[in-house]
Length: 311
Image: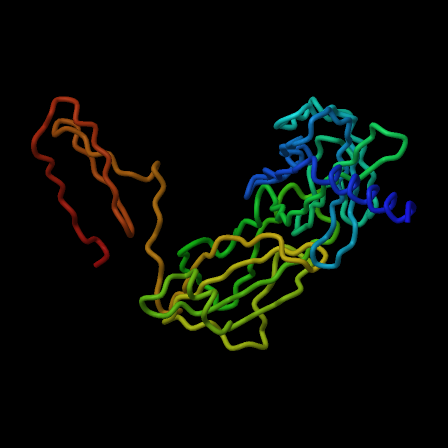
């Protein structure tokens, strides 16, 4: 009977110790990019005595449950009440990189890998002869690249002279965060009264390529030429190890009718410069005529005569 009572009392003591510390995670809802941001935590010691503890953390890929790295902080003392953890309190932090395929920066202030991850924390009491878990908590976070893929060609709202463009973009940054980058291209028609973003999300793709290993892709010769009477929208989705990490903006373009010619573009240096009457000048121009006039004496009228000399 005494042994049973002893076991029950030991269980009650452990339960009280476990509930003595409450952990509140205060991770930012977005914009997490570095390891230092993972330690935004407050601890509440509801007991009547101080506790010496360490914090342990496991960083796990949410898609496949693979552990990426673990971390252990320096010992800290929790007085009764609330303690807001500061970076200086827990230094040095020891990081153990478990999975090298994620290209984790070993520097304590280094960048995190991009993707969706589960971060689990454990408060471990170190005051007695044995380490004892006194609190634990987990949260799912999404680490996004500092810069998503950037579209290059066709540029936004551009009118193309080719019906089979070479789609071109730049990779997300910083590039060293990624172990295996690939891309997904979506090309859709934009219907009347439809925004480009809605078109990409709602319309059936005219062309879809889910596994691109380079930052350009030629519109296939096996597909029908793009229609000159339609507006198209395109988007690039970047993926690391086949897991989506960031989307580009959605840009639109159209294809010029082959019978349509673009107006001649004249640089600033091609502007004709009318002069005062005593220094009147003339110019032979073809296409668009641009004027630049420096009105020094505040003239109110500028007379220009245009003659057709093609006949």
